[in-house]
Length: 124
Image (cartoon, rainbow, N blue to C red):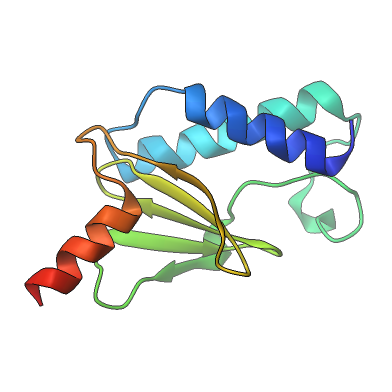
């Protein structure tokens, strides 16, 4: 299975997964789901130091964690071709570097990252 097919499978599994209740739970879901797909469909061992050359997809790394200005309830993780946004309510949004959203999963309260960002703009 090529990288694009594995990414599609990861996104499908994320959409089907139960909504999360916290940032920590959401990050753990992303990590376990992506690592599960990669462990199942590649023979490449988990080694984030080799992310540029081994062909494996890796979950967000803490050294790429960024604050989101004006949104203290949301953090962003930079990746090579994606940004992963996670909120304190468990919402998860994955966008391509082009800005196209590929996943906008709500948190346990039903609010998505995009809705939370719109809400805070309208109250500013």
